[in-house]
Length: 81
Image 1 (tube, rainbow, N blue to C red):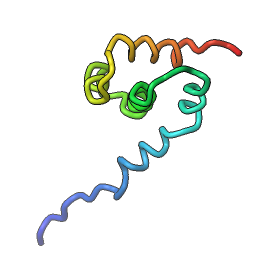
Image 2 (image 1 turned 180 degrees about the vertical axis):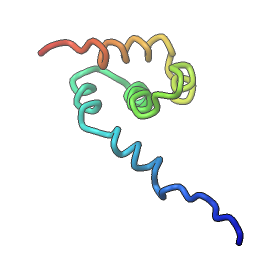
Image 3 (image 1 turned 90 degrees about the vertical axis):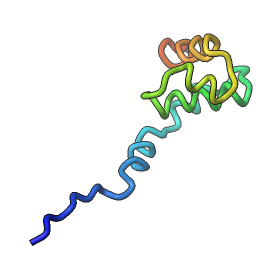
Image 4 (image 1 turned 90 degrees about the horizontal axis):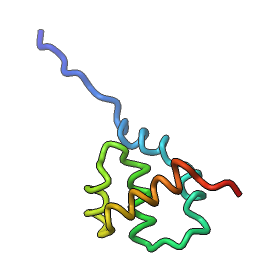
């Protein structure tokens, strides 16, 4: 009898990304003067925590230091309104 290959659940990666997606990161970006590239890079940081700031900044054409400052200001120590 031939051994059966293990099968992975279909859509596992997509489901994981869907679970991470929420209105919280989008709401955190409202009211800030951000370029489209900066906003896109920040959402990419949120969705892909396994990538470095440098990789994401290079992909979106933004400065790594600026991206990192925005990330910490908006997501790690958000201002109270």
